Image 1: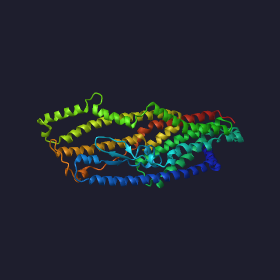
Image 2: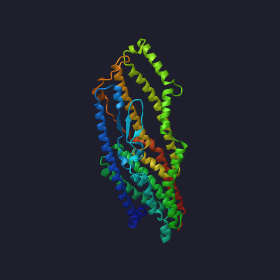
Image 3: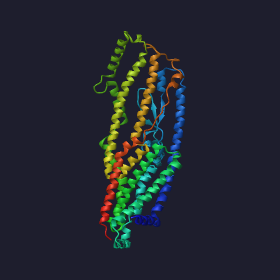
Image 4: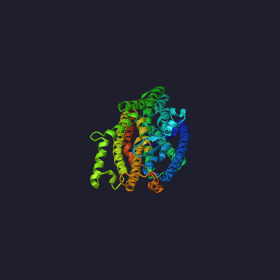
Length: 470
């Protein structure tokens, strides 16, 4: 078997097609990675500068009412994951910055896809797109006649006469092709880190990169096995090539778009107007089972009067306006959490629908797996947004508690009330991205689908190989 594998590897090298295609794609990928890394570095530079400026503005608001200072607000940014240079995922479509202000939880702003030039909106040639959609086509271009050509030239008959089991020949061809692709992929990932990311990978990044490489190898194994199976099944190379191109078009182009349409139709998302109208209604009138906000506030104030033994809010030993804001904002947070979680469940339902669609296309599973391991999927996005929301609540709670502790009753001082000491007491936002285990938990269904596709394709190849005749 070793000699047969060595023979197939040398045959690949002598043929030159796979090597030529690999080098050509590597050059194209280098261009795509260079463009992606330039954009990543520019966006990182801009984010760092904007963070510095906005924090400086926040720290130096001067003397003003604390609640007006809270409404000054602040932007926070999600740090770029290193592997986003390969797969930017949804980042271009969800926004770059999150505006934090009192009373309201916001969506991300400033989407790069909106600001992109018109010609790029047709589809950015990201490295992930090339690896997921173009490389399988090149695999087909090399492997479609790996067996049929030997049949047409009479070599297969000679090997059969020498007593070589056809399935051993098929397995050797598959192993040789996958081995060459594995070496090429390892080289690509190494170059990506050294040349384009320009940062030594830590343990978490290495785990993510290794997992991404495993996913791509399973994906390419599927196409190698299918290409060899078609070359084994059909007696003419042209028939095998045409069949494989149709399969590639279905996998890479047709099924993903159909799946996206089916997922959107099955679980439609509310419009922005509907979403915010529902939040405003539930905030004012109460969630199911809750009193209206006015009644809740009235009960809250009555309880504060009873606990402090006074008959008027003017006689309370703390600032009732700030305490009332804390109560109202707590209910606002509850309403926002309810609706954002419902929106998240709708996104999860669409993701699950796409995963079912991936049973008809390994390309869908690979796209989802790649974005998850790169940290650019919806799960990682929500992780950041939850951390930013916790920080928003911390800012507003800290300022309102300071306001409550420095006032009495309904008093409010509009001039020289708070100063820079309060603004600078707010700790800067520190976000710690989730580790590789988080990505694995989110991506295992897609990896399982890739494993299923590669197993099915390999089993089909072996079955056809056992039936192969000269």
